Figure (spheres, rainbow, N blue to C red):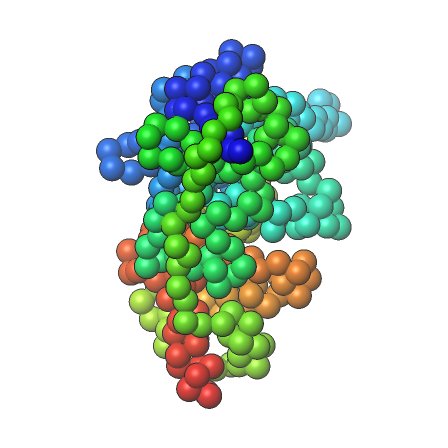
Length: 336
């Protein structure tokens, strides 16, 4: 016996949470595009499974711009005040399984040698409701990194669109149970996801090739069409590079954390003028090495969920999947 909720019942549950002071983020339409945004009424959201989103739910756990502490000069002293704790309950609804799956991938990073309370508090206070995929496209490759169109990793509840204005609800955690308890009805209907995307490369073999081919000229060849804009990193659910800067004046200001990208030319530019990653080929090598060698060696996760957002957002149709395919074809299978 499955559990069913109608779209109107789902909206009612979200409105109830909003009335209680909970923050809610959902896909919001802007013309033909959809982005995850904070909403104040459930009707502002769009609740149909989507292949492509303009952003990731990552920013509701790891914001683009975040204050760490403020400072004020008082005579000869400087008074520091930590940013307040994140104490508001939060719901993110409409996540793709590949987006939600990034959260357990990032957990060990933000709880490694330094406990990042900002990320951890948001994780603890947030309920993630994902929609199983109803279709995939040529950019999807979740199966290559252990995912699927109905992957449950990182989700508190997974909803299957039944196509009749209702969803099958599969509760996965206590947080999911708290959100949906008493709001579903018994049914014999069962939802299903789309077929899994197909891939013809093996990530483990490509990772071995990367380890053995640091100086390969293939890096420069496959990166010629990359313009280094960094869009791939900003839509990626797992990219987490950031910079910390001071904003304000000598007397008063704040320390802030801003998103950054290893694909931008100034990311590794030294004060001397030297740049150890002075070409786009070297920067692509860093990106792929980090995702498929360095991070899994340290944290046992690929730093990629196969969502395809990078290549969808790229003006040159570049991204992780095209790069993996090129490395597989011209490196692994060609024996170079």
